[in-house]
Amino acid sequence: MRKVTQHIAQFYGVKMNESTVLRWIRKFSQLIDEYANTLMPQLSGVWNCDEMKTKMAHEEPINGERFYWLWNALDNGSRYLVASHLTRGRTHKDANAFFEVAKKQAKRDPQVIFSDGLDSYRGAYDPVSIDNVGKVVHIANVGIRSHMGNHRVERLHNSMREREKVMRHLKKANSAEKVFKGYRAYYNFVRPHMALENHTPAEMAAIPIQLGTNRWLDLIRQAARNSKP
Image (cartoon, rainbow, N blue to C red; front, side):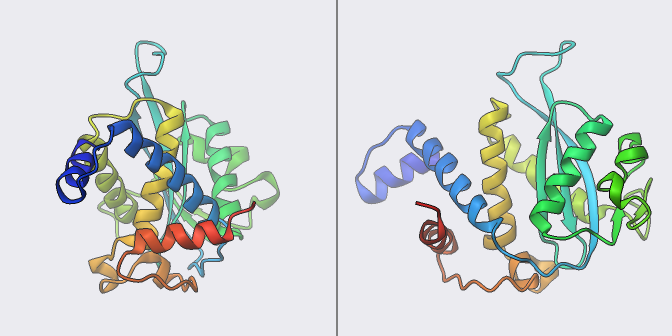
């Protein structure tokens, strides 16, 4: 954020505080996320699911730790980041809440889920809801080296950790959720992927929106036009 304020001061002659940039991030991340959740991505039906540990520097510690868990569901075919969900623990209840968020944002149930061996993925909450037990194939305990592995979602986590490192850890869970919403928009709509022949996951998921050279600005404009008054 400091670099952003320095850039604006140098090229536009406008001085501002870093907190202003943070307010922009929170405001527009929320706006774009609400808009993105109204869209209908064409997904492969195969989800790679995994969770990553992330530190919240200013949260109250539990058992001496300030860590939260970020759950991610990535569509295997389009690389579209279906959902990100932040929780304090990794219980069955947390896993169930994550899958319900992912199902709501995907607008449909998955056909196949790949996950690691975390026990919370199993049982009554496996994979989406009690009503869907037996309707979704769940392949658990896949390693990164497996030909059916979770390397795509692991690569996503590496990218998120790079962002987290630059920010020198996240501060509060509430603000972190907005940052992750902004990252989801960046990952899906803004950043071209070499593995997708320089297309974005949103393009691969056939989302019918047109974004120009400044994809961030176009996203904000389209989200603002479609927001509820």
